[in-house]
Amino acid sequence: VHGLIGSITDGGGYAFAMNTFTTGGAIAPVARYDSRYARAIGKYLQNSVNAARMFYSSQWDNTHQTNLAWEQAYDTYAAISYEGLRFTENGVSPMATGDPMTSGWGETNLALYGGGCVGYFGGMVRSTNNQNIQSIDLLKTDYHHDTAYPTYLYFNPHSTFAWVNVDISATSDLYDAVQHTFITQNISPGTPNFQVPADGVVVLVIIPSGLTITEQGNKRFAG
Image 1: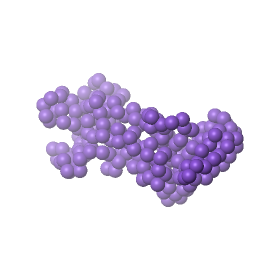
Image 2: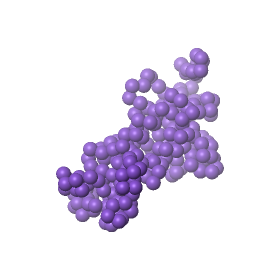
Image 3: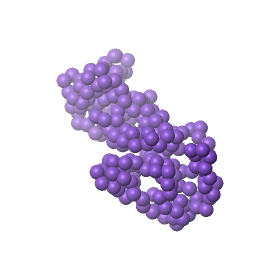
Image 4: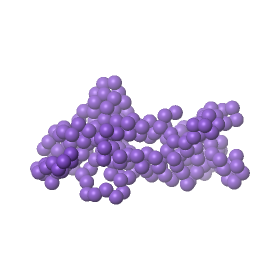
C-alpha cells in the first residue's frame, strides 16, 4: 500500500492514521515554496488520500478488521478510523487494527486521537471533474503564510494529458507555478478548464486579472 505512514519493520509493516493525515498536511505547502518538489508531493498525496480509506471499517469485511460489530452498533457512518493498518495480524493480511486491545488498555482499536486528524485531508482535498485527479489546496495547512492568492496542486497519474475544471468567481488569470507561466488570462467567472500534463503536475495560482507583474530576483509578484 503506497502513501501510508508508519513502520516498515513492525510485523512486516504497520501504518498509522495519525501519522498519515498529519504528514500529508505538513508536506503539502512545500510545493508552494519550491516547485521542484511539486510532482513528488502530488504523487505522494494522490496515493495517500486514496489509501487512507483503508483505515475505516466500511472498507473491510469482518475478517480484515477487529471491531466491525462495535462499528455497526455505534458508528454507523464509519466516521472513526482504526489506529492503524497492519500488513498482517494473526495470519490475516491486511488487518485494520490498533494497539489498545493487544496491549490491554482499550476496548476497541478505533482511534479518535488519530482519526480526528483526517481534518487535514478534509480541509485541503477536493474532487474534480476527473475522478482520478484531486485538487489540493496548498494554503489550507500553510498556517502562517503571508497574503496569498488561491493556490492548488493537481497531479495527473495518467499516461496522457487530462483536462481539469476550476471554479473562478471573478475575472482571473491562471498561473502555473511549476512552468512559471500564465496558462490563460482574463478568464470570466465560471468553470474554465486547463490541461495537466501526463504523469505531471500543475500548481495553479488564481490571480485577479489586471494586476501588474513584477520580478525581484527569482521571484515573481502580482500586484
